[in-house]
Length: 370
Image (tube, rainbow, N blue to C red; front, side, top):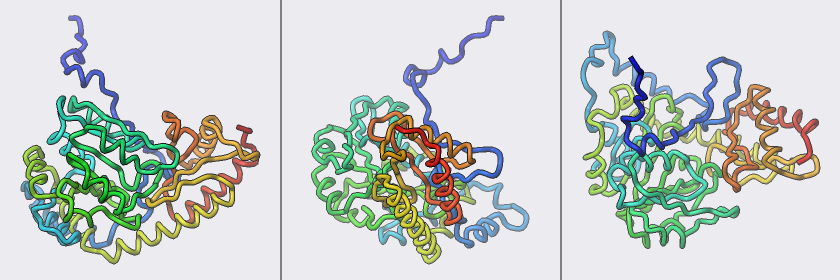
């Protein structure tokens, strides 16, 4: 019997799709993992206690479906942001929330806009929906391209703020001016906002077309639980609930998220530690003469230079490979002119950053000239 090519039964846009490529996840030990912006510190101790309580002594609760609306979690998020629970939706990671937004507000007649460079998953989600994509490019200054955003004609626009991969933040004054003039749904993807100085969540009361998307993966140290949420006008939340999977968050994830968001003191301490280490790393890179964008995130985006002060994509690739040979993983973005000479480095513990700096010293002794 001749084996058929079963991919022929998939719809055309899926056959043409290139899947999102996440950062490398090594299977063996001994790595210093600075490539996926995970928190170097564990989540609040309250999280473990909440999970164990939810499981119970005999695991009886696990045979029951979770609350379909994640009601307790929505209430905790609402309290955290000072909004009504009707303004909150929870999801299986912020990627799930982004998928719901595109599912609800985009199709072949309703384009999605995004800035470039930015989170590359957006392009995959848009292609999955069969919608057109409107890209608005940054230049090297990373100034917010307001005119391009306002004129792009997208029904839904997604701005990563602070930006990834550069780490650059945008002020609420800028965002308010832009959102107030934008004719459509404006999404502030705030995966890294806890490490910044401002949050667009403060603008929700004045801008009903604003959606603020957050994750528990970065500041809360819960990347392994897959937790995210959005805060928006109740009418937007209603649309997202219509396209949401019935039980999109399991019982343990809901319990973990409530415990994490209610422990505000632990969050503040963790964020302060990461920001302090970030400042030390930025200072050390400045002493090397490397250009580094001012970061409002838990990572830095830096441009390696050789002994003569030159930079090139080949030089950056050489450092990336050298660090990997030292079992240090960082992230490279070679496919865009603005990012091809940079590396993105997650902020780890002080000892991990010391190991990173030691590796840079070793590399600079033999680095090729650009």
